[in-house]
Image (cartoon, rainbow, N blue to C red):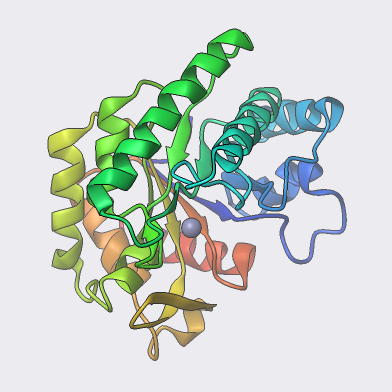
Amino acid sequence: MLDKVIFGPAGKPIDFKGKAFESSEYLNEHGLHAFEYQSTYGVKIGETSAKILKEESKKENVLVSMHGPYYINLASKEEEKIDSSIERLIQSAKAGEWMGAYRIVFHPGFYSNRKKEKVLEIANSTIKKLLNRCEEEGLYDFTFAPETTGKRSQLGNLDEIISMCETFDHFEPTIDFAHIHARGRGILNTKEDYNCIFSKLENNLDIDRLHCHFTTIEYTHAGERKHHTLAEENEYGPHIKDLLLNLIENDWKATIICETPLIDQDAVRMRELYESLK
Ligand SMILES: [Zn+2]
């Protein structure tokens, strides 16, 4: 049984000496029950290692997700890049199945100076092709989780992510609160500021466990600039306490992947804070 709200790092814990796929026991020992395996620079994990991650994470009660490659653009102006994006997601779905990942997180793409509606349409037609390819490959046990993105030039505001997940099976959102904060030039400042995100999600989607990313973040006019540690939250927002209070009040089941520079150490701090609030 997992807690209602679980925490874990985006990648291998900083002081863990082994390989990323072997980190489940270490995470469990530190009270962390989520782990996002990073394939951000390409899917390089093999079947044997991925299956070790699946087995050990089950044993240690750690819920695994996977971050797919950055080089994905569902709405590229170039056909070739659309095709390679589909292939990267197929590779991710395969590796995700081996490791038992409950979400395959990815950034959907860029507007490239086109109308937002048009870009979303192109992305949707790419997703149709992607799901057909999954069927051809005999893949059934996968959930793609497009992420709310942090730059204003990127496809992936909250409404667009919800729309994709409403339209397609095998799609659930990744809500990156720091990205929403940065895109909105600092909109998440109180516990109540999260209500609008949660009510949109509740009104449009049927989510069992909400997959989230969180970090303290610095932004510019164009959106995200730099991730900061939790200790720097006086200088930068958003504040994890506001999010946790809202999750507790609304009884959400959530996975919070920590993306501060102290991925696992700040995840432990988040969990300790959560324990003290609930
Ligand atoms: Zn993120």
